[in-house]
Length: 121
Image 1: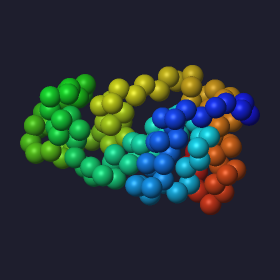
Image 2: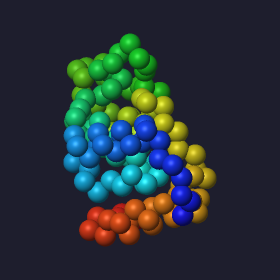
Image 3: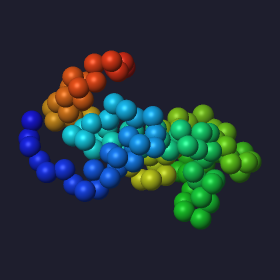
């Protein structure tokens, strides 16, 4: 594994997630995509089923806006909450990233450090 200096931003996000949310298994050297997954999880934990596009109406609109989406603040479509939040904060996941050796190596390292966590394949 490459030994790289960890940015101050990553250190701050690590501390925030560890301290404020139920993310005790996060490691400072986990991949950026793992951090994004934990952050999305924290947003869902905090907001539950509240749709970010409805809650923050001035920021943007859902790309798959459905009829009936204007009622209340809760998600009332069949999309996964993770997908909605990723779209809202404009997180892109290139297909080649998920299948790259680097991605799986990082995942393997995180799994080794967290043997009690269930991994769904």
